[in-house]
Length: 295
Image (cartoon, rainbow, N blue to C red; front, side, top):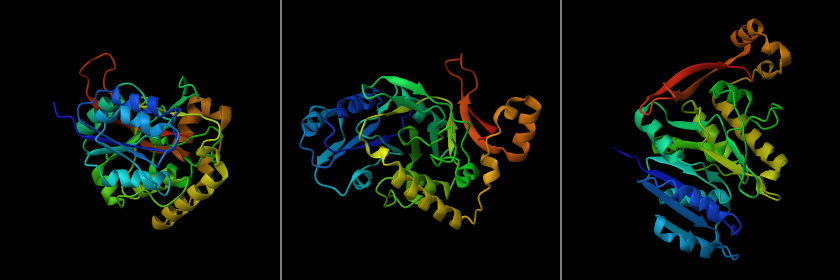
């Protein structure tokens, strides 16, 4: 069986408390065609010594000063040769068998250029899986309307970076670089991808975000400023005017079947969902379903 090469970049800086669990979550997948690259920013807290212990499992690693997280990731990707790409921060973790699942989808569904989980996970600070959320779907139109800006919807929809994988061909079409943002580089990259093709949602959990006090993601205000700037640029490029009426919360009305059907026909989005044809069969093929959803 052909296993497409998967490249994972892990950026780190003084991450000694958590990086070992991150490394193990990737290495323990035992995926046979893995290119794992760690880009450390010159840590002084023991992180380098931990990385060195896992050196035989890494394609390469460096510890040197950089200009921040996204600079480190971009440098890592310039060293890479994988067909499928992603990055995993030095406190987050993959779920078991994620890489085999992702590889199987890309191998069998050539029309899929990038994918993300519709069931993103969350770890607590101790590395315990505390939740798996359920997202309604992905589509370019819902993204352009701002559904996946964190404050747009009180349900807290977001496109989880650690659960997102893409083909090298899409990376190259999009500039082969994460845009120059200090916090919202991930969101800006999704904007670049959406300029070329739609995102496919996967009905399986793939990874989880670790919640830690004092992490960069707590700077919510500045993240939102940067994400809004990137989204505004994409809207301008695609000449898109947001349809904010679609983002209204219809409450209990949407639970009434006939009303929900009408709301979907008037205000719903259409996305692509990847799932199995038969969950009970070992060799069941993947299928893509067109899925209408409300915010």
